[in-house]
Image 1: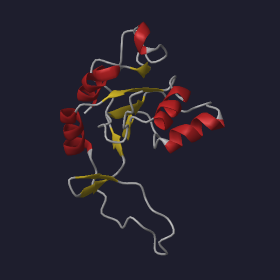
Image 2 (image 1 turned 135 degrees about the vertical axis):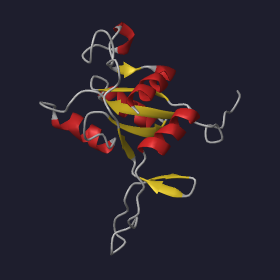
Image 3 (image 1 turned 180 degrees about the vertical axis):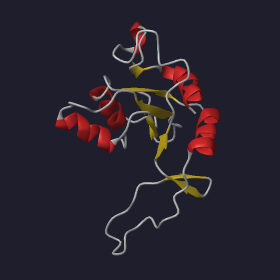
Image 4 (image 1 turned 45 degrees about the vertical axis):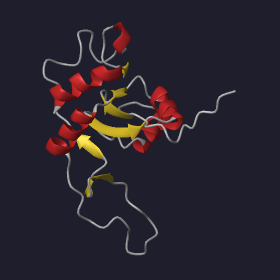
Length: 151
C-alpha cells in the first residue's frame, strides 16, 4: 500500500462568492455563512481546499458559488479589491485574535467586496445550479472568469 503525504501537497485555494441574500434563511445556514466570513451579497473569500471547507460549502451550496482560483486572479483580487488591515491583530488583553489575510508581508481584510458581474451571472439566473446553466454551486476554474467580471 502506498502512503500519500497530504500535508506536503500544495492545496489549491477556493474562491467563494455569496450570490444570493440571506433573507429568510435558517439560523444554521446563517451561522455557516458567518464562519465563512460571507456577510453580504457579492462578498468573496479565499479559503483552503480542505474537507472542512468542502462540507461547509456543500451546506450553503444554494447561496454561494465557488471554484479553484488561479494565482493571477488572486493577485489581481488583492491588488484591486484588497483592503489593507492596519490595526493590531490582538485585542488589548491578547485574548482574541482577528482574522487577516497575509500576503507578501502585508495584512489584508479576509474578504473582498466585489461589484455585481458585468453581463449578469448566468442565463438562468441565481436560483439554478451552475451545471444546469445557472450561477450557484461548484464551477471549477470558471470562477476566474466570474471574478474578472466582478473586479
